[in-house]
Amino acid sequence: MAKIIVEGGHRLEGSVRVSGAKNAVLPILAASLLAAHGTSRIEDVPHLLDVENMMATVAALGARVERDGQAVSVCAENIHSVEPPHELVRRMRASFVVAGPLLARFGEAVIALPGGCNIGPRPVDLHIKGFEAMGATATIEGGRVHFRAPKEGLRGARIYLDIPSVGATQNIMMAACLARGQTIIENAAKEPENVDLANYLNAMGARVRGAGTDTIRIDGVDELHGAVHAVIPDRIEAGTFLIAGALAGTGVYVENAVSQHLMSLIAKLEEAGARMEDDVNGIRVWPSDGGRLKAVDVKTHYYPAYPTDLQAQIVAALATAQGTSLVTETVFENRFMHVAELQRMGADIHIEGRTAIIEGIDRLEGARVTATDLRAGAALVIAGLMAEGETEIHGLHHIDRGYDDLVGKFRALGARIRRVDGENEN
Ligand code: EPZ
Image (cartoon, rainbow, N blue to C red; front, side, top):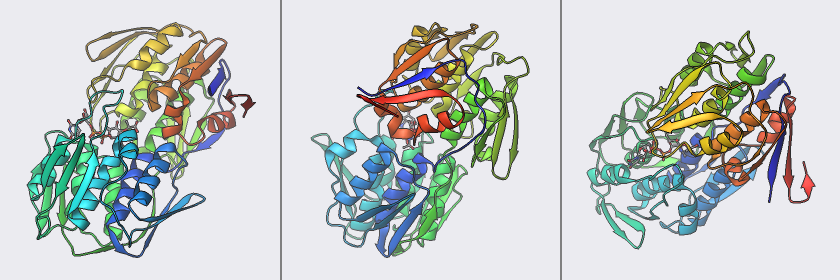
C-alpha cells in the first residue's frame, strides 16, 4: 500500500509553483463537448486522477482527447454517444457536468446518478430543476437519469438556484449556450473556476455575461467551435501551501497564486498572525513573529467566503495555535473526518454539530493516519510537518485525485517527506 512519510520539525523555505485549477479543468473538459467543429487546446492542465477520469469520460463519448505535456487537446466533432460509462461517472461526481453539453448539443443525455461520497450526500436536484426549466424532461431509472430536450431544442429560462451550487451553475450555463433565447441564472455560484469556464465558453463563441456575480446571463447561439484556453491557477492548492508556509515556513513564495481568489484565507492567516505580501507573480507568506499562529474562528461558506476545500487544512494548522479556535463547516454535512486522524496525532479537537472546537496544543505527535478525502490528505501532510517524529499517511488515492506531485512540491520547499509505493521509494 502506498504511503507518505513526513518527518516533522523542519522549516519550509523557497518557492513552489501551483498547477492549473482542477475544479476549472473538469467543467472545461466537459464543455469541450459543445464544439461542433474545431479542436480545443486546454493549457496548464495538472496531472491528476480526476483529470484523467474526465478525459476518459469525454473520450468514451467519441471525442479525440490527447495529452501533450501540460496541455490537453480535444476534438468533439465525432461524438457517438450521449451516455458516458457509468463506472466513470460514479467514480467522480464532477462527471455529472457532461449532462449539460450533451443535452444542449444532442438533445439527450443519460447519466448515472453520482454516488454519495464521503463528505456528505451530494444531490443533483438543482441540475435537474435547471434543465427542466429549459424544457427538458428527466426520467430517473436504474440509478441513472435520462434527460431529453424538446424536439425543437432547449429554450432559455429564468432559473433561481436555492443553493449557489458550483456544479449546477456550470451544468446550466453550458446547456444554456445552445438554447433558444436568453437564460438567466440567479443566485449563481461565484467561484473563480466558474468565471474561467465562462471565459472558455465565450472563446468557443458562446455569449455568457456576469460569471463571477450572482446573476449570469447566457444568450443561446447556434453552434460553438474549439478554442485555446489556459486554465487559472489552483487556488486550493495555493491556499494549502500558504497555510503550510504560515506554520512552518521562513518566507515561502507561492508562485502563480492569485491573491484576489484567496482574500478570505489571506484575511484569516493575517488575523492568526501570519504576514503575506503579494506581487504580480504570486504570494509570499511568513509565520507569525512568535512562531505559533494565534487561535481564530473560521466559517466556511460559498465563494467569496472561506472555502470548504481549505477547511481541513486550517483545522490542522490551528491544532497547534495559541488558544481556542472554532471552525464551522456550513457547506457539507460531513466534512470533519480528518479530525479523528488529527486526534490520533494528539490534537485536542471536539465536534459540536457543525463546529470543530480546537484547543491549541504545543506539538502534535507523529502517527499512522489515513486520508479520508482529498483535502483531508493535504491537511495530514501539514499536520505531519508540525509533528514530533514521523507521520505515515495512507489513503493516497484521495491525494492523487486533487494534487499534482504534492510530495515533490513540499520536498522542494525543504520538507523531509517521501512517498513509498510498495517497495520503491520516491
Ligand atoms: C464543487 O463541488 C467542487 N468540486 C468541490 O470541491 C467543492 O467543495 C464544492 O464545489 C463547494 O465549493 C468541483 O468543482 C469538481 P456544490 P459541487 O454543488 O459542485 C448541495 C474538491 O475538494 N447541492 O456547490 O459538487 C450539495 O449537497 C471538491 O476539489 C444540492 O443540494 O458542489 C452541497 O451541500 C470537494 N443540490 C452544496 O450544495 C444540487 O443539485 C454545495 O455543492 C447540487 C448541490
